[in-house]
Amino acid sequence: MNEKIRLTQYSRSGGCGCKISPQTLEVILSGNISNVPNSGLWVGNESRDDASVFELDADRGVVNSVDFFTPIVDDPFYFGRIAAANAISDIYAMGGEPFVATAILGWPVEKLSPKIAAEVIRGGRYACKEAGITLAGGHSIDSVEPFFGLSVTGIVSRQSLKRNNTAEEGCRIYLSKPLGVGVLSTAEKMGLIRKEDEDKAKELMCILNKAGVQFGKLEGVAAMTDVTGFGLIGHLLEMAEGSGLTARINYLKIPRLDCVKYYIDAGCMPSGARRNYESYRAKVTPVLEGERMLLCDPQTNGGLLVAVKDNADVDFLALAEKEGVDVVLIGEFVRLSDFSVEIV
Image 1: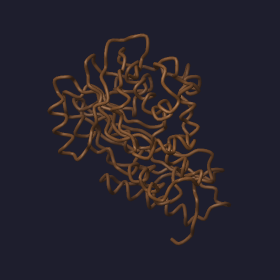
Image 2: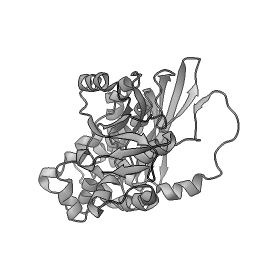
Image 3: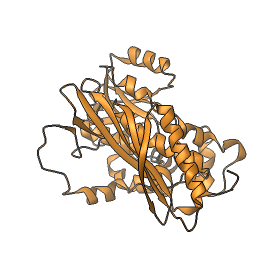
């Protein structure tokens, strides 16, 4: 396809940065928790987990999630690929193995050619093929802004199922990808991205979190989630509050894209980062402006955030190396203090 297009110009925000803020989401969901008992539901909407899990039999559960968003990159093929990888990640983050997906497409048909939408779908199919799953149809609408995503179904054994609210005191906290894709994506949308940095965020967002399937099999992994639209602090908060603990993080150990400071200093901050910080600033130790923007930067298909028991590091690190994943130790879970997340 030779047609040049800047997809990011057709939406107010892109990727997981277009998610509703945590504070607003609390209002929307209040009073909407189902109180209908269902013994077959292992994981439902009573927690802030990445996917629902419904019992298939005594040992296995069906994992299901849906995720879609507006363009985070200009290239339609990569937009589709990244959106699909991001949706599939929710299954990996539960320790599950995806096997089928259906597509969700919104397209402004009077503004953008259907050939461009076909490229988005092609990117989605590419990511599904990479994950070894089937893209089995979907649903599309004529919409004001373009958006794309997947509803993904997987399977997980009861023993391998990982939650985001089951960390234990003393667990080490590991992160499997550097931060900063929201900042670089904003720089691209603003037309300020440097030539040498054009592909850094795009390539990172395409990497599948497949290692979650294997991490789920380790007894020493106490809890797991992935870092997406609420930023590192937002997803740490979900883990800490759900587990009744405090996440103590060493800021200097947090991996980040090497060019991210340049773009933060240039003012390339996604609006979602500020919304995130305003939503949970009272629960986090005070940090400098530049630091909070990185910590709250909305990630799209961000890394796995893994809580590992303090006697299981060796096995976990050996498995991560085998899976080709560069995990970084960024902190630990400690007894609950005045803040749910402490930055030191």
